[in-house]
Image 1 (cartoon, rainbow, N blue to C red):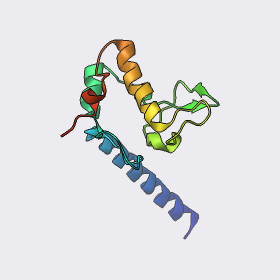
Image 2 (cartoon, rainbow, N blue to C red; image 1 turned 90 degrees about the vertical axis):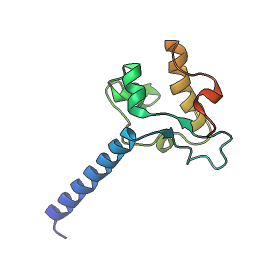
Image 3 (cartoon, rainbow, N blue to C red; image 1 turned 120 degrees about the vertical axis):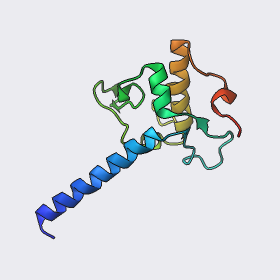
Length: 127
């Protein structure tokens, strides 16, 4: 395949990934627990767009953060990746494991803002 065709197909593939990812967040109803082999609680209920509208969150990087060498990169966002792409199941040095990362990010914001659920059953609703 010639280099130009490779470039075109690469751009099409990347566009598809970004479109599907953005669409999936718009349609998001729960935080996926796929990374956990035996979750102890149901998936956390989280309607992405409704939450952000109610919370007044406009910038994706308020939740979808990027760290490099342990420092927050202010103008970068990770909404094109899953949390589990960076966070393993266990803590790795100063990087929290996946469950702790979810709780620090979500519950930590709720506590800091003094708004939103902080008790387990308020997010992990049994159906």
